[in-house]
Length: 302
Image (cartoon, rainbow, N blue to C red):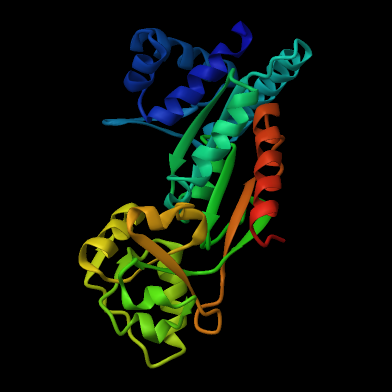
């Protein structure tokens, strides 16, 4: 839609942080893009961007404008999706910000199910930790977010809470693998591998040990759950993860998981939601509904 082009240009500059980089993304010259921005600023009577040596940043007026811009662009995407629905072919784009635990198994499965019915819908998946997920919603780079044990979610509209008990992950030959569940003190008798402090799993463990005389002394720390799971097998140590991030047939890869007794570590909460007050595009709204149905079928939710 030609009348939305100036809004698209402004959004691109905000995301890129510079007129030159935005122009490259838009496949136009930086001179032409700057001229469009100046024309918009002249029409509004105030600067939208503060020009700096290494790029641009929004002024106060620009902050107000960008919320309007992104609302307009989202509304148009929703209208286009609704019109496409009339022909029986759903189109659109769904963007999701999620914690790393959901990347390997659950989310790919859900996207594949949705695209099997609606192949014209495209997806973008952004890896965001629990401190970054809300910002991804606020700046409209994501429609939906999945966050485990969020720090603060002031602008987050929760659609569903999914309970996730902590699991100890180990090689199938590990002594603890013979048990159906494990106590935290049993796990900490062995060398452990932990995620970095910005992950909700680490937060659950640190909160749990503060109530006891136990200590966390990891021999390996990583920001990759896949690495931690693999290393648990390689060195025969204990790692920790939530069940949604574990493979369904884990024994085939030589790794098993055992739930940590909830008396030691209460289950954490996985939050699934969107930006408060935002009307989602049709494709994103329908995908959110699918996700909630699958969550409720497989996990304890509220």
